Length: 152
Image 1: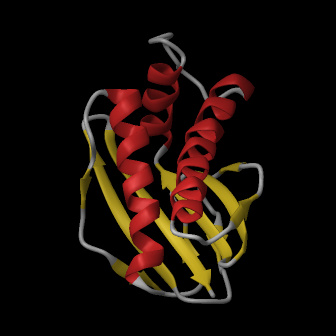
Image 2: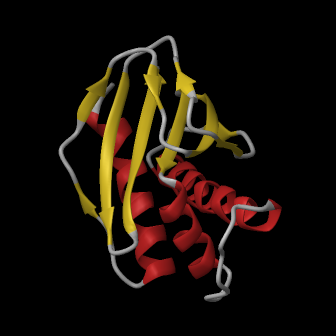
């Protein structure tokens, strides 16, 4: 995976998170995930096609997902991950994906994204069939991880 393919995802995530929550996340040390790997309790899966193919996943613990959903829904308390709060979490992924798609278009590369799929559970294992680069994003609400499995 090339740096010029990773950076648009990181820039989009920083921009979206900064706009929604008032502060950009601190980007942690990138590392490779072994396949298959266990995801956190809540994951947003978005497929990528076009100049790049694969997927990216935003994964987080349930309590962090509740905090993010609450903020995205105007501060409404979220005590359980129901359909509405899961939709808000999916929209976070959709916003990052949309911004990433625009950044690639500005670079002359077209990518298409699938609608987000939100997964919840403590036993979710992910195997993408290709190298997965994981990027921790540290926020005041807690840490999330962006996992990229992309190829040209």
